[in-house]
Length: 83
Image (cartoon, rainbow, N blue to C red):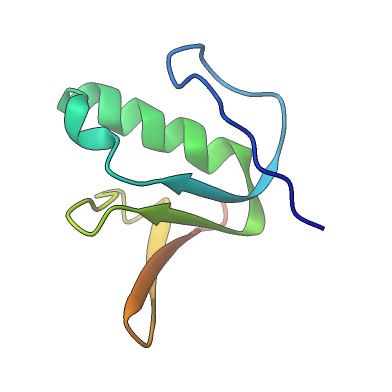
């Protein structure tokens, strides 16, 4: 019921849609503008009820595109509709 894929973040947008994206401890290696574009790309490929998991020191910083969900000791992000 679950499939995992590795994707190259520098190849541009994926045509596939995803239920969940694990992007842990990756964005710290990118410039601020590259992070912003990466997050916009992730928003465009997530299903409306999908989730984005980032590293504990990372935040999307795009309040019109992602909202934080806190569950017990975990935090993940859901895409905002129309963001």
